[in-house]
Length: 202
Image 1 (cartoon, rainbow, N blue to C red):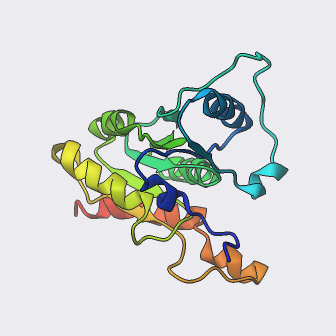
Image 2 (image 1 turned 90 degrees about the vertical axis):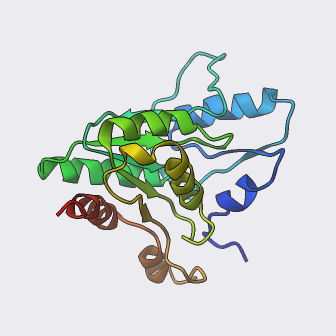
């Protein structure tokens, strides 16, 4: 019943739960150690498609990442793109494509969905003045909805365009592999969402 669906937003709504979703192997190692050592319940979500990708792993046995801290994967000055889990890779690929068009995108790997690192995103938006949120989950009641609300409250004066959102298709996840791939967000959608934040200035 949960075939290929991202329920991160569901878990993040529950008070008392901490929710993390790693992208790299370093994220996984550091956050899993933090989750085990945390006295509170922690939901540790993995995307199985990432199992086929290779990342560097810190050799330090005491390598731990703090829960509640995002990571700037790619610094930039023109637009902020936030993502978590496998969508970080899509966001980084979109940033490379945008660079060819003269747009310098900052990509933030959220890593922790609750607690949420609002400060890092706000500081980025103050620099770039634009924000696009990317996630696999559905748009209605999504993490991007919460992110947009927080930016309205804490970074409204710095935004030059509405917060852009790139999410999964609003439909039950197809079992067919080709249809499943169509339902997920891809780099061209992220690029278009970023370009739309610039067109709003016309």
